[in-house]
Image 1 (cartoon, rainbow, N blue to C red):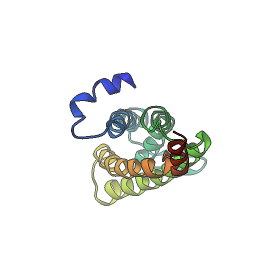
Image 2 (image 1 turned 120 degrees about the vertical axis):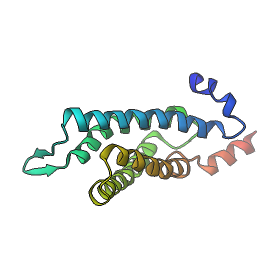
Image 3 (image 1 turned 135 degrees about the vertical axis):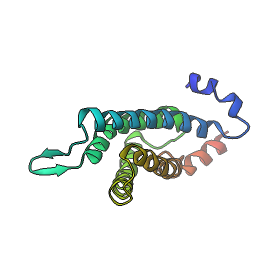
Length: 162
């Protein structure tokens, strides 16, 4: 955290530390996700659909699955241990809520990728980038207010003890 916090000072006038940490961690994880998506789509899958057990999965969707398998656990760890450290919810509650949020994000990713690539005929990588921006805003608001929120009763009882 001290590395991220070191770079916070010039931005401290405009955003709070938690938002800066979210942008730094989320931004890094997002860049990694997009790079893995690009490499998977173009060089691993060679833009070809994947056939598994009689099911055909479009290459842009399978590339999303590949990139997601890295970005999900990394994103949870960064959110829990770097961004939302003040959350007093139990770790398993956070993980469950994070999984619910991520399920929503998967659905949103799927819908937007299908929409942008298959209906609007945008290129897959810019579509993934636009989709990621939309989903990131939704994710931040959800994480802050649901997944890693601070239980008010515990905060108030700690204040009265002081």
